[in-house]
Image 1 (cartoon, rainbow over the protein chains, first blue to last red):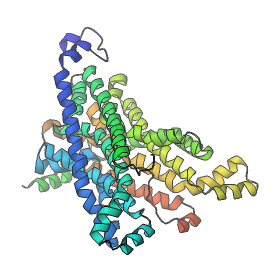
Image 2: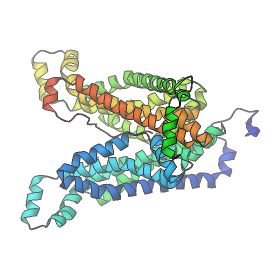
Image 3: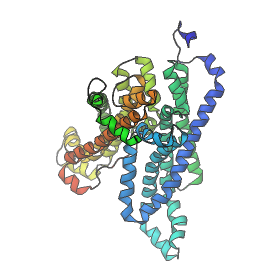
Image 4: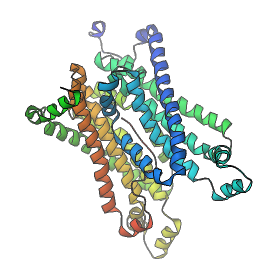
Length: 221
Length: 235
C-alpha cells in the first residue's frame, strides 16, 4: 500500500472499489454460501433432534443443556479445537457454525411444538390421526412460525459470525475485513463491514417475506 | 508425542505461567477488559431497558436493538474501532461495550414488561410511589431476566475479547492469534481451552449470582433460572 503512504487513507477509495468488484462479489457469495450451509445444516439436525426431545421428555433437558454449553464456547475457540483434526478448512468453519445454529433452532422447534394446544392434539387423535401423520400434518405446521423465527435469528447470527472464520482462512466478507486490518487499508474493511450488516438485514427481511407467504398463519411478528 | 500430550506439556511449562506473556497476566488482562466493558454497558443499558419496560414505551426499539446487535460483525467492529482510535485498550473497550448493550436492553425490558399488571396495581393501591414501586416491587420481580441480560452480555464480551488480540490487544486471545501467526497449533489449542473455560466459568458464576439475587418468594414461584428473552452470540 505504499501508494497511499503520503496521503491520508480515506474510508472509501473509489478507485480500489471500482477495480475490485469481482473480488468483493466473490467474498459476498462465499459469505452467503457459508451462511446457507450453516442454517440448512443446522435445520437438518435440529428438526429431528427437536422432535425427539419433544417426544421423549427425558431427552429434553440433556439436549438443551448440551447445546447450551456448546453455544457458550467462543467461536474462535471452537474453530481452534477443530483445526488439529479438520485443518484450516471450510469443514472446520461449518462444524462450528452449525453447532451454533443447532442451539437456536432446537430451542425454537421445541418451543413451537410445546405451544401446540392440547385440544388440537385431542381433536387430531379423535379424528384418527396416527402419531406420525399427526406430527407431520398437525404439530409441525403449527410449530412453523416459531421454527421460522429461529431460522431468522440463526441466519442473522451466522452472518455476523462467518467473518470470524477469516482467522482460519475462510471468512467470506471477513476476508475483506481481515485484509483491511493487515494492510491498514480502510476500504476493504468498510466494504466488508457494511456488506455484512446489509446482508443480515436483507436476509432477515426476505425470510420475513417468505414466512408471510409460506406460513400465513404466523402471527405478525 | 501426540498433539494432546504436547498441549499438556504446554500447560506444564513454567515459562507459560510467568512474566508479561504468562497465563495469569493474560487472564487478568482478559478479565479487566471484559469487566470494564460489561460495567460501562450495564450503566448505559440497564437504566434504558428497565425504564422503557417500566413505562412500556418504545417496545419495538427495545426488542429490535438485539436484532441489530446480532447483525453487527464483532470482528469488523473491533477492526474499525482500532482504525479510528489506534492502539490500546480504548478501541477494544468501546467495541465490546457496543456489543454488550443490546442483550441487556432487551432482556431487562422484557423482564419489566412481564411483571403482572395486577401486582403493579396492588402496589399502587398500597400507596407505593412511582420510584418505590419500580425499585421495591417491579425490579425484584424482573431480576431473573435482568440478570439473564447481564449474563448473556458478559459471556459474549468474554468471547469477543478474544478477538482483541487481532488488533494488538492483550488477553487470552493472544495465544490463539500468535499461535496461528507462528503456526504453533499447540499454543492455539491451549489458548482456545483457556478462553472456552473462562466463558463457561462466566456463564456458571453469573447463574450462581442470579440464584443469590433472586428473592426467595420468586424463586419458589418461577422455577426456570437460566432463561433468556433472546439468544445472542457475537463471537
